[in-house]
Image (cartoon, rainbow, N blue to C red; front, side, top):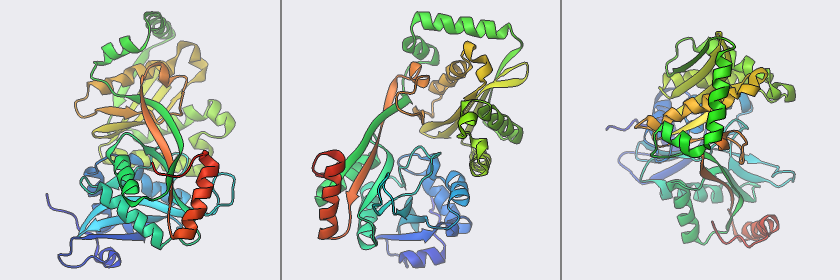
Length: 387
């Protein structure tokens, strides 16, 4: 398969010329990757990445940056070999670490990005991390360390990062370690449901579905195309805002930036063939809705909402019951819930776990690394020996 070349401007910035195939690194203004050959290269990288991450694909990350990085402070760190893009991660400098005024370098994200694993072409895993750490050493500025959030610890990229850190003897520490619900099984949807919930609970759910059906015409729809997508998005935003998230001001529709991101990202996912949307309707009115991003060989359950007026019938659980049909797909091996750890609803059904970590890594020279060791010990209570 022929590779998509970087544009001449980006290739020159990265130091790529002629037949030179050694890895090159650069940090770009993300706007240069929003059009043309650079955008094509980004899309090709996403399709061939060793680990899928929809939140770093162009159709999600570009609208994220357009809405949440008006100053252009984020840079797209890339690695390339010859004229082929081999890795991409949005990065930025921050002057605060949690509540403290500690300058550091980090992957760029916002609250509606639930995975931060970089996009890396298969076979370039360790080379990518080597390139990022070398670049961070040379471009630390005031940053005392590199902080990477929301990394799945069960995939090849985290294993590659561990290997590079160990080989270099570079101080590093896992500063957050948690598990969230994941769907991964060889069972059929029916058998999985039977194994995950007790007979009593399944009987109660069937009773609730029956009683809900007595309230009106109950209909379930699953779509993967873009037909009537705008109306569907309007309904989702309204449904979510009508519940507790709207009361707390955290619903997507409470902020024009998040509502615009949601609209643009779903449209982009649909165009890329990576959107799945589910809706449960009562007399034509949505009472539960769900959005999945299908990123073969995995998937991400991005957002869900339900009508709290019907909560006694568990519409959120009913639509998750339908979502188990992901198990019947030959192209999807797992689905990340994107839910908080110990989520009371999804963990009633999804029994597998995905380990998610945050790590801090020393960068720069000896003095900076000494300071990092002290900071890491204070945060974790242990020496920063590695990952």
